[in-house]
Each structure stands twice: as structure tokens, then as C-alpha cells.
Figure 1: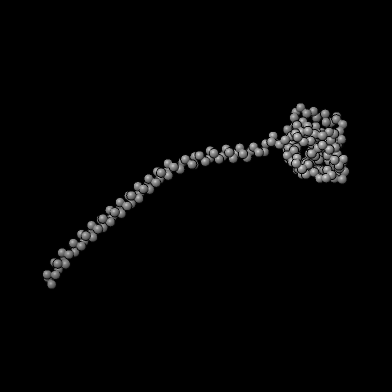
Figure 2: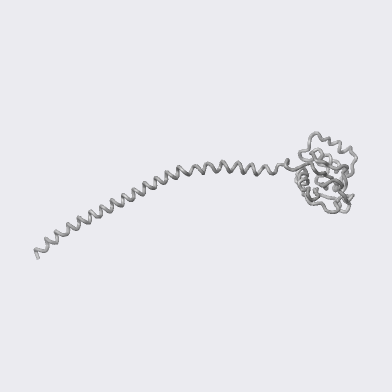
Length: 205
């Protein structure tokens, strides 16, 4: 029994040495892998920081100005024609002389207005709101007149039209004047228009 104890004590140090070296090898390999991962991550960060500013800086420059310009331009009133058709004003307000005043005001704005002005048909009664009627095909002319009048409603004219004669003659756009605009100046009326001329001119309506 005394001979077996030294043999066992010799075998234990040998196995301990092998275990320590194996553990150190694993630790060194793990550190190497970790360092490699950190280096690759830093390289990828550098690439991303160099590439990303390009598209970010270019997008706001090309998008914002184009959006603001295209939004404002289509509403320009100069795109709507004020010639190429004739306008007739019919007094539906019941206030004498206002259709003649409206005729003069529209002429000052460049519209071709039929004279003399007329009255609305008796069957429709007194009108509180001004409406612009148009013969089919002259929608743009009615829109131009509507803008000058402050954006009043437009709609196709009925047959017969709502005027006392029952006929528009050469006119293709009809302004049925209501009390809302009767006797009032138009926005943007030319300063050369003489307000006394409408008052002294003898016209229907």
C-alpha cells in the first residue's frame, strides 16, 4: 500500500498541466475573435458615416422648392381668359341701376360685356346671391368672371335662361346679380374706371 501513493501523486500534476494550457489556449482564441469583431464593426461604422450624408443632403434641396412652386402657380388668375366670349349682366337684386354698374366694372377688368344690361326673369324673384351661368363650352370664361366677383358659384345656364327676354343673344356667360354684390366695387378694379359713368348711363336693370 505504501508503493501506490507516490504513483498516484505523480499522475495528478501531469493532468493539471495539460488542463491549464488548454484553458489558456481557449482564452487567447476568444480574445482574438473578440478583437476581430470589434475591428470589423469600426470599419463598417466608418463606411456608413462616409456614405449616408450624400443622399440626405440632396433630398431636401430638390424636393421642397419644387413643391412650393407647383402649389402656388396653378391658381394664378392670368391663366383664365377674359376675351373670346361675351358676358351679359342681369339684375336680380331689385336695386335699380346696379346691373349697369356691374357691366361697367367688368368692362374695366377686360371682359367683353353686352350692352345694355338686362333684368332677371320675373319668375325667379329677388336673388340674394350672385351666380354666374355659362353656355356649355364656356366654363373657363365663367370661371374667370367668378374669380373677379370673389369666387361666386358657376353653373350651366338653363333653357330658357333666367332673363326677362328669355334669350342671351350673343352672350355665352350670364351674371345674375344678387343683393350680395349689387352696387359694390369689384376687387382689383382699375382706378381709371369712372364710377359716375355707370350712374349717368341709361341702361336696363
